[in-house]
Image (cartoon, rainbow, N blue to C red):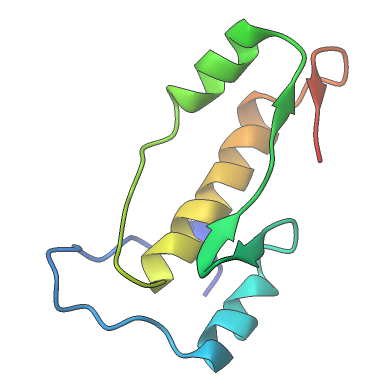
Length: 95
């Protein structure tokens, strides 16, 4: 199932981190993201501070001890949010 169509599971502890193999599989679904010290990473650059704040205020921060499928679902949803609402070639430089 496409990651943007999935729902995050409750993260109240006890959810084991994903295996390295599963992380590799899921990274293929969010190709502009990478791993950095065991965390999902993507750099965003905005030309205007107001664009940055508008985007950040649209993203909820989720912390999990080790990568879970929720992290990949969130990354895919962030990409969709960006593409649907924030991509404007005149104001945004997407990396």
